[in-house]
Length: 283
Length: 356
Image 1 (cartoon, helix red, strand yellow):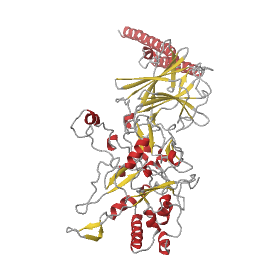
Image 2: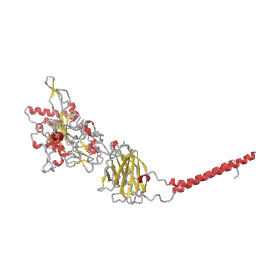
Image 3: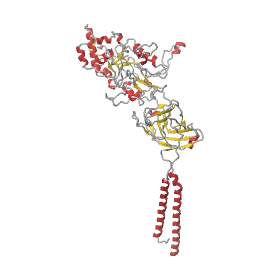
Image 4: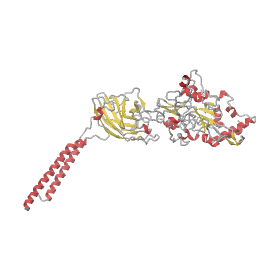
């Protein structure tokens, strides 16, 4: 009885060990299949730029539902203005897309009150701005750029006006002689969606978006009900538009992940073998 | 001027005009002459602020004191500087339009053309407006009192509105210290509106920019239709001619004498620390009356504490100086100060071409 029992028990153990090894292999294979996609997931400050065949200049165009949004954390700009740190919007979502001729950006954020009209001295409108460096290759100071490193600012305000501005530091925003940026907005379910449209190409003072390189981008949001205007605004840090060819050079991450995976496999096999030997089983 | 006066005035008078400014325009208003007729207000309004989002603006207004003024409670809304060092500004506040007063429609056409018997009245239910508390003043009969206070932008030597603007859209003109809003640079942020402790910068919701008194610079430059130099419209149109217009640093002019030599023309609310260039001869009033109608010479009708609130503690010396000179003339003596205050030399009233 006992022999049979032992024999049965050994047979069970064999089965268990084989199952364990099989599980580890499956895990390893699964890891090999999934880890590369994890390793190539976009960094938090990357804004993917999708190609759209259609025109996405309308803020509720169907095309926007297929374009990934990046959530940008917003905080007050240290402008030194009265109540500068008292801002109300905490985050905004940015989407970017291009077609053959135009770039489209959509900024969305929660704001229960749509402040569209300035009816008197105490009324302010909601507003949003997208900021990109004039020189695509050099990151300017985040606060409206710098004297030698200006920025393009696309500005929309709740009264429906859109502006294309050049700035080289706080207080220097100047409209371009002719505007090439258009902005359209929709307020739905307590959120603003503002779509900016501009031709891809640039010039001496206009950011060129028909480039094969990443381009920095930042946004700012003003809540009119909170008397936010000028430097009293909620701003993001620099992000970048992924217009470049993507990561290049040796695939260090892939190699590291592969080594880690093999190490896990090796440890698992050694552990199982150790358990079997402890139980007196011959290999 | 007597030796006494020279001693009274102190050894060295100095003129505090802003750095980088060649000359400083200035105005002296004699509050004893103001009859509250609002001709200055209308002169300004018809010239500069008719329509175009400016209906509620009165770059020149005349309000009754004591009173809440225009905009309502402007003296309590802060702004200006923390101290005479001019390093830190006091945060101010923006008044809602209702505290200025709306641009009400009136039933003119019904009365003028449709034969209506209704009284002329605004077609709204206003609760405040310019000089809303007209002639109310303070005190109890028979010793009630009030006086009128005409106000324009003070074109300050240390303008906190200029400092408040993050875009440097406001500036002090180099040639004459007039404070202007560059309409090209202004983006309607209104930090100047809240930064001015006198609430003399106005937001135009139609142009989405801020605006203010320009000291009639085209007039003082002789840029009008007749190519002649004119004083500001508020001054020239004034029936009792209570204003002197010129330059503070024109040492031969009456403004310099009243402000710097006799020190009888004082800025409004000097504690705001903006160093205004509009000055006021503080108001005199008859003494209080007893219940049986007798004058009580020892009690002033307008309490000195109230005048001190408006014009600072120098108001005591100013009123004492004027009283002394009145006495002198009453006793048959001569006083340059009294001659200036009585406009005995009209050619001196507007001295705008002395630095041409």
